[in-house]
Length: 172
Image (tube, rainbow, N blue to C red; front, side):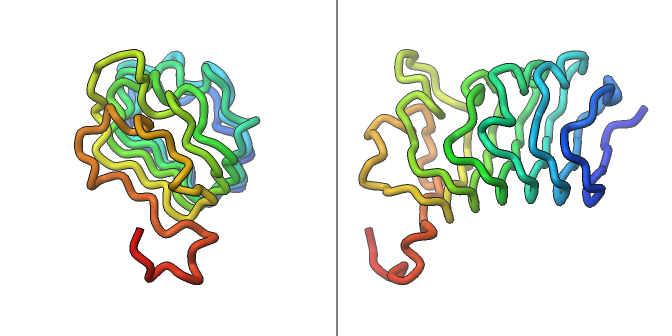
């Protein structure tokens, strides 16, 4: 039974359909992926543990609310670093098992309230590592409760930001 599939470095432009049902790890890094089609993971049982989409061309227009359907209870690692994301992708709140989220090296400007933590709920998140460094985020504008569900605050990496590289030695 196939558990891991590596399709990295293949010039793919979207996440392929008809992936093996029992797959646990999918490596799609270093392609030209612009889109995660809705429901593309919907048939998977129990669902992926790891989705590696680093070094692609993903923008927010290429990720829908239903792009991760089928992974809501299984995905523990989501690697979206080195893409063209302008904001934190929709649908991440639905990933109930997510422990590692890499969004570094994108063009994200804001961390909106309720993008990583649903402040209307008092649930703790399983997230233990969130990478947001090398974006365009002004940390002073992050809402105080933006990371309230993440109990291991040392694992939220926000610095340096791309616009801070000239003065990254300053302590904030």
